[in-house]
Length: 300
Ligand SMILES: [Zn+2]
Image 1 (cartoon, rainbow, N blue to C red):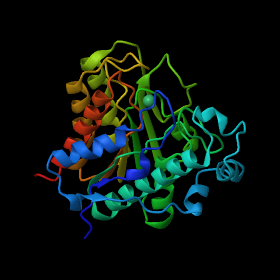
Image 2: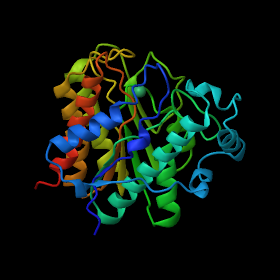
Image 3: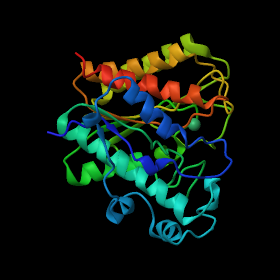
Image 4: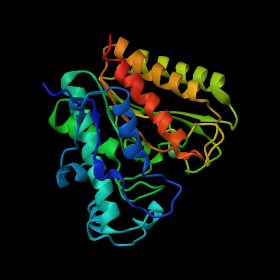
């Protein structure tokens, strides 16, 4: 049985030039997780991404633009370079989330993709540093081919998971939940459950609101699997937001989601999503804390 817990692609340090999105965080995170004493056999590589998987979520016109790296009204809203190299990097990231989700579902445990979480990608266009909606692709792929039923997406990134909400609008098998700062990008879509927070909420209120939502999700929705979109950007020193969570608050966030799922026997996968702390090492530390919570589920 495969022992991989952390799926990582060394090529995911996509060069996007000078940008607020620090793609070097992926490699730094992988080395910090190794430094925790996680053995090499617990690291795995992404699967190749199949066109069919992409087509389960994205429109043909948009996929054609991406294939040709064409700057169109569908691709330019990514706010990323529209180049073959960058688009290919994001495509490889899809394979990481698919692989991590596959392992989690088949082996009934928690895994983590050291990448992914591109929740602003819509079926027919890019947005906000996101080309492919890797989480939606992994969900549809497992549902179509591996018998996965009801899913909950728990999106705790600073920003609303607008692309994910739109993709699963009207799909009863996927419960979308987003807790985010309200007065920020993006233009909001309707998730099944949205909590739009005021700036400066801090740890206590954030965690109270999150816990209430988790009660509802776990008690009423009975998901068979959780997809956690665990952005590092609710952090107090983030350049894009003002939710003002501490390192401890963010670790508690991850514990609330993952430990509750494990206690309920629900497998899941973590993706990283955003993180724009003034110091990249702080973003990496927040993601590493999430990895520690995942790793902790194996030490029982
Ligand atoms: Zn974000």
